[in-house]
Image (cartoon, rainbow, N blue to C red; front, side, top):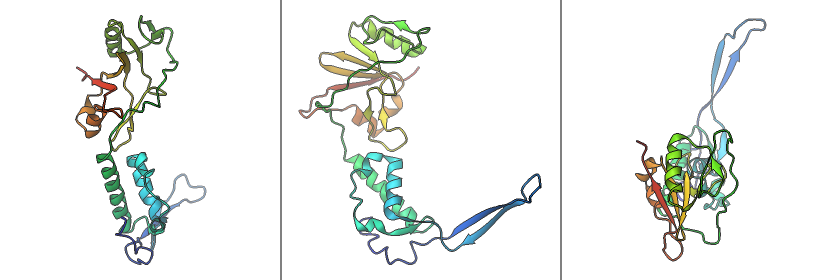
Length: 230
């Protein structure tokens, strides 16, 4: 929207939109209300272009909003919620998000290591494992099969919790912003991020980028393996 709305401070048409007031009619002492009264008014709520575009970006991918210079005075333009300008601004915000994601890649941060922390388990359901970083885990049947197979390799591994565990940011629009693999396995200086139910990510651009995380030398340090549920 850099140039398209540079004159919106003086726009008296596209930034205005009708609104309405709704009133619930209730007779005192009556068991139920008598209906809803709707009154159309000339204007809807006014917000800044900054608020509208930033809100749209935050709903699609919050990292994109951090790359915008919101101090630019053009974002001070006031726009009514139901105006013609409102959906146009939201559309421009989504275009910016698309451009950001299309031109972004994931890289491995050598100086920002992840430390495996403690994990909560139900002692009545937990099973011990020989090579895990934790003494035991309480897992569902599918996870138990994976855990047994991983443990049998003799490699160091751990169950990765969704809350507070190791995660990889996803370069994709939507509510899910980070990928938490179910298991982490270490072998010969490489980390294998394994997940038995992440097949839906593979077909997306975000999934393909997630499979190609490299360090500054172009070496792949995190390998991702996902298996479809059968």
